[in-house]
Length: 253
Ligand code: 13P
Image (cartoon, rainbow, N blue to C red; front, side):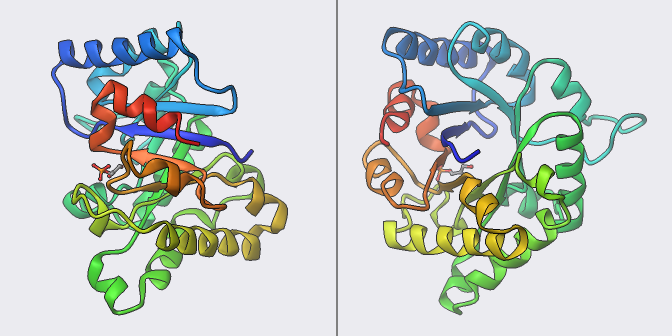
């Protein structure tokens, strides 16, 4: 179902005590003044903090996601965290295919497709990231880049499986740079992505798909981005590390 979602990707930040404080502060703010019912807030802290986070979330109105999941189901894979494990502590979402995972951990489209399958098989909704680097946009091949990422990462899914996927368009040149995509640039790519889904799965499923924008989205620019017809919310990095800013972004629809 198409939803309004604001998800916070904490990346590799915070110590345990700081993480607990930040999540508790977010919970306190939205408990005192709840979000509109049709808005879903998701927090994606590092693995180590997930159980603490799901405990606090169970008493509040937000949801918890992981930032990554193993491409393997179970067994002798030292250091990995499986989708089954995430499911066993009530983690509901998982970011898959973030550009930082693609770049620094050499995650290929094929690996990402496997991760998507394992997440879905374990009742975890993937937040699948796609987006181009600046040189691709300058060369006017950014639509092709995003199309390939989506086709290879997601289009093997059945319509029933695809229904449970959230997409995040994150132009890499906008991540952590303070250079946000213009509302028109975001809308143009989101509409393109929805068009791809329509071609593959039909108009109804395309309309039902939630497509988030990510990349220097903050409390000042969220309202204008979220007012675009095909932008259904945001995947927030830096600004999700400040409780008040993050909640304000969630109130920007
Ligand atoms: P920033 O909001 O810090 O640009 O990060 C975006 C992002 O990568 C979220 O996944």
